[in-house]
Amino acid sequence: MAAFPIEVATRIKTLPPYLFAAIDKMKQAAIARGVDIINLGIGDPDLPTPAPIIDSLAKAAKDPKHHQYPSYEGMLAFRKAVAAWYKRRFHVTLDPANEVLTLIGSKEGIGHIHLAFVDSGDTVLVPSPGYPVYPVGTSFSGGVTHIMPLTKANGFLPDLDAIPNDVAKKAKLMWLNSPNNPTSVVMTKEYFKRVVEFARKHAVIVCHDAAYSEIFYDGERPASFMEVDGAKEVGIEFHSLSKTYNMTGWRIGFAVGHKDVLAGLAKVKSNLDSGVFEAVQAAGMTALGLNDSVTDGLRKIYQERRDTFVPGLKKLGLDVDPPPATFYVWVTVPKGYTSTSFTAHLLEHAGIVTTPGNGFGAPGEGYIRMTVCTTKERLAEAVERIKKAGF
Ligand SMILES: Cc1ncc(COP(=O)(O)O)c(C=O)c1O
Figure 1 (cartoon, rainbow, N blue to C red):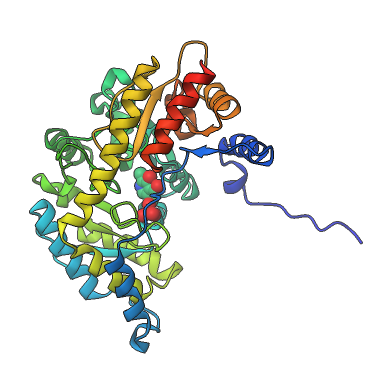
Figure 2: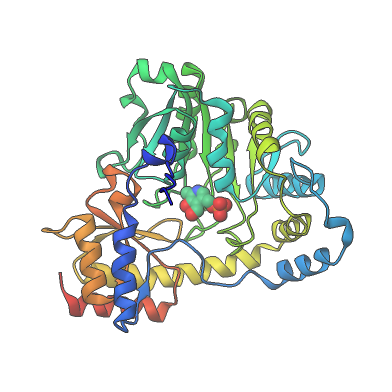
């Protein structure tokens, strides 16, 4: 029989090579050799979803009224719960009717928004290192990224003054992410004010990704972009229930802000998906209404882990700062290593899976990312193993 040629589209062919594949191969080989792997590579909470959220899903799932197609923009009751949460947490007023949009996890909205606003050849401002969906979403829509490098010298914040005027003029969207994955850096309200000025001056839509806003330490609550004057007139903010409530598998998030920007995203979505299962939205309402003591409890666990792990790494001579937020630890690789070779070294000689910084974009070279999504005891063991392995 003649071969049946399968030719993938250029947009898939031109995706950058999957850097994590080599690490994954080594990880599988180590597991096959019987190595007890400590996985500090993935940003996925190891703790369970709080019980009241699960109970709420179970109850809602039994009600046949939730079994049909949900509305595209999400249940009004869910959007009201989001607005109430924003009021409580950030003192920001949102109209649930048109300033809140439900998402199938924030990744879905982050990927799709490009289709609403980016035409072929349009420029998108993208921080790097950063969440890979920003550049991939750009490329799927035919857009072109302009990289805003995050470096130690600029405090891992996009240098707005370094964006050439002609690029800024052409840009349609600007991605920002605070608290940041992978660097953990938090943007201040003063920084956000400068972003609003920049966006107004150049007519760029700001897309702020706040997926980690509730994973913070030392009581220092990160700000919402929506807290600064004028933000709602220039952009939107993406949020997720994934990290805040240990709900990564549930697939529910939301975007808030400029109603016309949300309407553009909603139009794309209404042609591609059919919303979030209503029972999951009901559980999401329960989550957003939970007492702060629940999230305080989760933060306390992460903070204890951070405070075991980071001083341990420092004691070994690694160059690392305690993260002010997120469950990520951004570590400078020791002399003589690259991101990839240090990741390989830790896996081969200490049985620890980490992520090479350059996997988040070229400016991440020279770093690795570790997570505190495992127990204090395992993190202490990881430090011991690195000590034994040396570097
Ligand atoms: C920076 C950032 N934004 C968004 C997401 C997507 O989260 P979700 O789709 O689970 O809401 C992630 C997930 O890792 C992330 O790291």
